[in-house]
Image 1 (cartoon, rainbow, N blue to C red):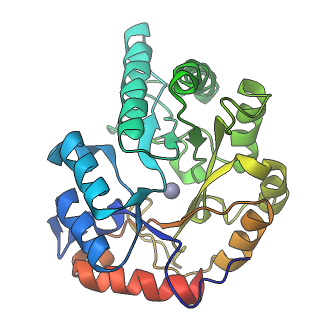
Image 2: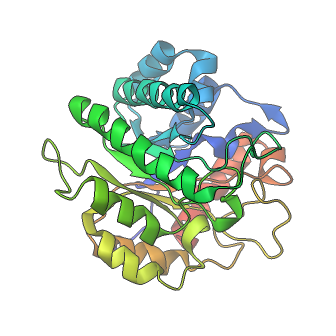
Image 3: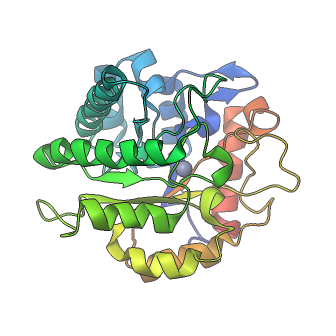
Length: 295
Ligand code: ZN
């Protein structure tokens, strides 16, 4: 396993981690400058943050600062009530693939979606099997386009607490089943074309985790780090700083790296009651320190 204790060479910042600082929404351009200031050499930005500033501007800034991407968030959200909704999701994911390409991302992170309407507050049906079938078909369609432009897709299984609103793919095993079904050859254009984004927050609890990491092999395209707090007070926005919770992060990283993963370790913390209230410099400094001691 790589030694992270002396520097933060392999730290990437998922830009949602400082999307707000001291409670105020921060432009991505400001976040990128802060990364450069702190010697953070990689990021994983969110589409809405990119759109708010402008794709071309962000692409130019990323280049000027010499930043790399560890991923691009996100495509997916396939399930819908009707054909038009399904079609719109494909078009939107196609756009996300193009943006990821413009930003030179190594993969597009796929949050696949779940029950239509649930995220907006009212599920329009309860048929999760239907949603899962739509997700499978959606990924298959997106993969065709992604392969044509050479952009790997990384399915991110989300914790089952998100199964209604955000993703009906909830375990690494389920994500890998989809990979095996839709991409049995494992490669296109010399790279893994369909793989997984492994987020410790979503997967740490799974009794099959280590077996499935071994099964994943080179399909692991991204590694996301934060911590699980006890108690957790919000299903989405109460993620902990590495070292403050109960996840065996180094143990998971060791298993991931044993499969040959040698990419960035991406810090991704949504924290409305704590870290989003602090200054950006304090959060980044803490991420850097904890990356050395708790990742
Ligand atoms: Zn993640």
